Image (cartoon, rainbow, N blue to C red; front, side, top):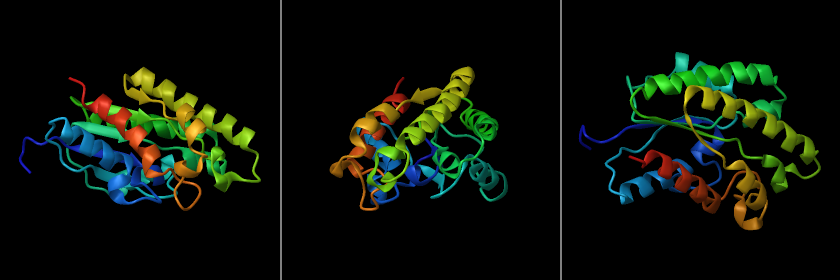
Amino acid sequence: MTAANKNWLALGDSYTIGEGVQLYDSFPYQALQLLRAGGMQINAPEIVAQTGWTSGELIHHLQHRTRLLPRYDFVSLLIGVNNQYRGLPESEYADEFTILANKAKALAERGKVAVISIPDWGVTPFAAGRDTAVICEQIDQYNGINREISGKLGLSYINITETYRLEGGRPEGVAEDKLHPSAGIYAGWAEKLAAVFGKG
């Protein structure tokens, strides 16, 4: 890899890791291949994400356990599903997402930041027996928060939630754990992300 290659920081939780699929089928790595196929010289994404992380846990890791580059050409951010799952206050998420969004913007000072909406896990087989209407409503509230903050900061916003509600519960749309997206679902996210990062 040469110094001319672009760098990308991917922040998130199990969705960014690609829980339930091979690493190369995760949305960051599928987007990477699309960008490279389009002629971009770009390093593999630096992934700071872990299954189960809330926005607060991601902040803690960034502050205390991660050495980052001074700047990145691209930063992606998908976080919040575990806040909703644990029933944490929306006001807490708003405060923490603001911190993360500002951090992402600072790290990509002359680059691009893409915020990805939270998928609705209530459509998956894992949610059987739960009140999926409540999950849907809460996911919408969380996404309203991250969309508003992204807009105020001038960050790109990728809404994958509505399409995921149509496709995420189908047999071909879920991984073996019956919760996380399949490689095919991640491919759709990757296309949207590559379109944002590949502009101009």
